[in-house]
Length: 441
Ligand code: S3P
Image (cartoon, rainbow, N blue to C red; front, side, top):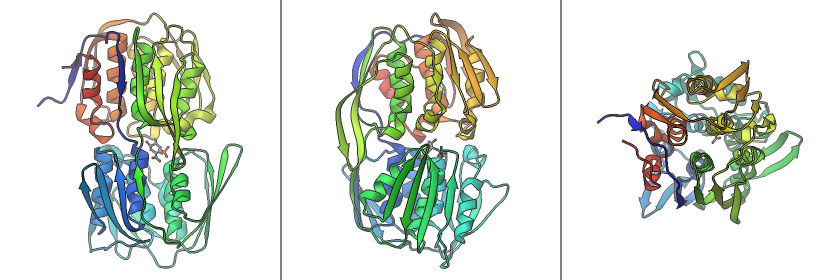
């Protein structure tokens, strides 16, 4: 079966209510925390994508059982470090940086060596950002060139650390938070603000955590070795998957979309803030709080007068997974948009900043780069008629999906490879597009 798609027709006007995939960050965190809880946790509406299924396989390899009945995953936890470890355990994190990094935080007391591997994309990514703090806890980690594959062996002589996180990386922060669970004493973290699902879950589970915020930093103290009980959780919709439909509605003529029950936690809605600064008029309806997380339905309609923006870098980590589609909006806005300090964007499943610049130039948009800052010269009259091929992008799911949105909104004839990449985060993506009328072959 071919693994590419063809799009050669723009999407006509549409009005739809859609349910996007459940949140990936929360799904993975729920699985990892359930593996450390005492008792049976019940997680509903878990995202069934490769990254999350790999998280389930990983805890299974570590001796934690789970079963699925109806829409509920039951995970059988035996408390902190309650793994049942055999020798020669191999964990394959596939494409998921979040799984690979966070699970290391749970292995700090493992009695045997555990090997961690990933796919081609994950094997190119930096792991020193998490192995360095874990080594300070006393953990033994060996890797070549600070990347996967790596071997980790825990210790019973862990010591709490003072950790300073300055990239705005929720993965680094969360890895250290999970390591703190199994470490005696108080682990102290000062972290540049980033998505805070781990903090919210810790609070909900009554794990001893103290939180303070000052300027662009969060201060987090965690008292380790406190057992916590199993929990029930219903995973809300994913704003990062929603982003593709938000931009699709915004850039299509006479269209409206309502996205149902999406997590709109403040640390995730950078995209909404950025697009509204560009005159998008996106609204939240039916706001609710669920276990400390805000959810809402998101209402978007086509925008006719998008304007450029000077994007505040303080929003970068709150929109880090959405920049690819934000750049599409900047390409269509009136004026020059500026985005600064985007080095982290090149550390994702593929070097996304480099890709985005090539992509925008390919579709005739002027872009100027100065190290990690870019200026995008928008063209409100942008309409494409040429032929475009998108391939060799390390199967980065978000690059595949943003290319589909560009094809459906700007026009032209597109051949986009590696459609299987969507299975990592949003397996229903193409079906949802077809449901709203997209012609995709
Ligand atoms: C994630 C954090 C972000 C994000 C990733 C998911 C998480 O990565 O890009 O898709 O769930 O913690 P960084 O922490 O590397 O910025």
